[in-house]
Length: 286
Image 1 (tube, rainbow, N blue to C red):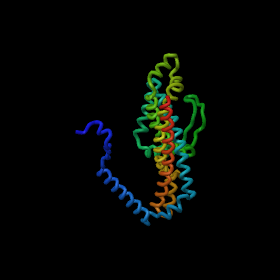
Image 2: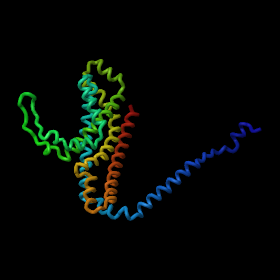
Image 3: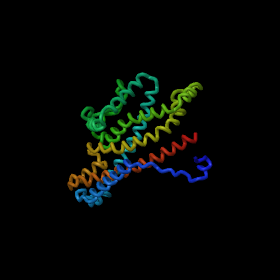
Image 4: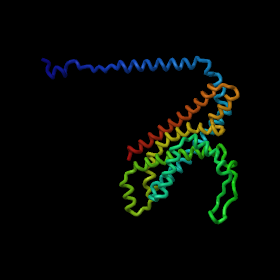
């Protein structure tokens, strides 16, 4: 019979890792399928890789890329401001403001973004002219031609920003809910007004949750900006469409657009990863 001392002084037991036959087999099959797809795409002349290389740095494509980035940035700034305002209305306690914020969320989260873009682009059919002034006083500015104001660029920024504002309001609400309720009660107990509580206590802490989550919204916004091509705004998609409408190289030009979208989204995801790591580190230091 083997004693405990014999076990300690004898040969140690060797741990044999468990074999994952099914997992390894599926992995090999997936690698083979991926290699087959890559080889097929690389050797298929119909993909038009020389055309892709020719137009990848085309000035028209680069201008479209810049317009896409510009619309994305401006729309997200507008969306963030609207999200904060809507959440302030929702948290104000005023029934009218809360009702208006609810209607805003209901309408812009419940209808397709493409429909909103088209309606805003054709808003002059409803209001050919607009003016600003004090009601019932006759004091105000003269009528402004809507067609001269509602340009494709303005429509793109407004439509994307207003739509995204509804989603940013929910992101901000989630960040606010992450703030301990005890801190809010403590701030109120020392006489701080609701706006002071929000901007001095709640919002600075909620930013830790809001900013990383906003990264996903920025990436989604960048891709959704391609919808403004339907109103002839020269974004990245519209630019490649303008090129392949002349040379009929549809697939190669769409590949050019796809590669640029992948490059930009990859950069944004890398930045998002850095930001999330930063705030996660700050959270562990607290």
